[in-house]
Length: 630
Image (tube, rainbow, N blue to C red; front, side, top):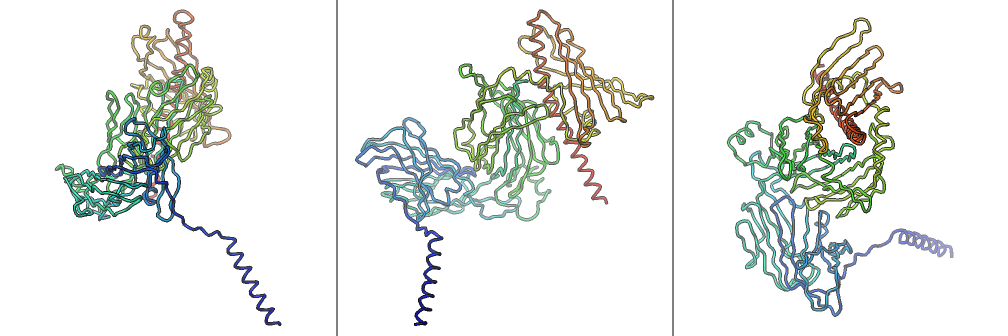
């Protein structure tokens, strides 16, 4: 009897443990996805474009509705291993060119297939045919083989896929074309009486009566003697200024050559020989080119070391071009990081819609290198202070969209900030997006009070005052033509440094003022006093030409911040007066001067920040040299 009780206790315990285990973890049973066979593919023509590092597939399908009812959707399969690298998918009707909605839906865990549902703009009649064009774009699916090559070696890539087009339905007839950039071909999948090669084109098919989701291995090993670029991180900052009618753009790029890695050590001699004799046997990138808006100005380009002088810039009719050379050639596996920026007229990208009383910013999501893979992109848009009711309209999905506030030195409440983030970006994302907002012009009156107040420079007083003397030239001061010191002396009694400088600047005369101002150039008199004992610098500038039309006087006071000795407190005051002509004209001139002053103040702040950064870099380099010598 006791033995039976012990046996019962053990069995009960085992039962409880087993029950606990099975109840705490759900058993997931893989199940196939059954796609309704409402369609019959009469013919499929698939083209795989391997002419760039980004693989693009275009599939033209003549599909017939074989269901006994109206059908308004079509399913398109993508293999799981390719879906992870799918950057773009688009479907449209060939006849009308109407783009259809594409939605990611069921996943077949048994066959490892991700399905996408294409929804038509109408329902197709039974037995009716429709011709679809489906475009898919994939990144990072090409493999360099061999993985490493010599400095002047040949680069070969391997593409792996299926001889059959992606289809969830029975296909009566289909063919696959593969386009290459070069005729060099190491190997490709053979199939008797089904493969044809003609220089840079390989054709598979026709194949008849191919079952849904059929797969037959395809492998192409081909030559590709070009750099393979991947931008690991890309940040684009756009700052909208209604004051000066300006859009300031700055872009930060972390570029990597993702091709076959350099085998062995880099030889400068070998590189110079290939460059001298014009041999292009290397996949290294020697030169880079950026296409900018046609009216881009004040262009600058710098990397982690500092300014880069090996660059040329030119304005063309429908674009601007920045050509530059990195500090070193980019071989496979090598990286290069830099940033560049420029200004463009705000009117080129912002318009006012009177019916809705809204401003609309219309800019490209990306404007950089084509045929390049972008792993992570962040676009930050800083709207003017006072912008409200902000709406964002973008033609493709984002990974993240956030709204916030961005404060600069001369802001009170801060600027409205919109941040757009997306991964796996390609040329197809180079589309314009729109940000609309309301903006009361009375907000422009906020700035005179701000520039009459204080702001803080995040650097010690001696560094800020040094930057003041060194601020010309800088990339943000292209309007400054010359700076001459007229007088400089130290007061023997007070020990103060007194300086007088004459500055020649060139501005843009508004269309309504062309008859009033004959020349856009103006001389500015700058007087300054530096007290090294109290660590105070006071400057006063005023124009000495065009005085009758408009007189602009500005005072700046630089002092050590009482709360933080590592910061400098700057006070700016300005007075703008016009005594020219009748009241409406003088008020218009004063309004123009006020806007230009605010714009120049913002530009001057960026110029000072640029010079401060150069001084910091110089100090860091000196510290490194001191450490090395020690």
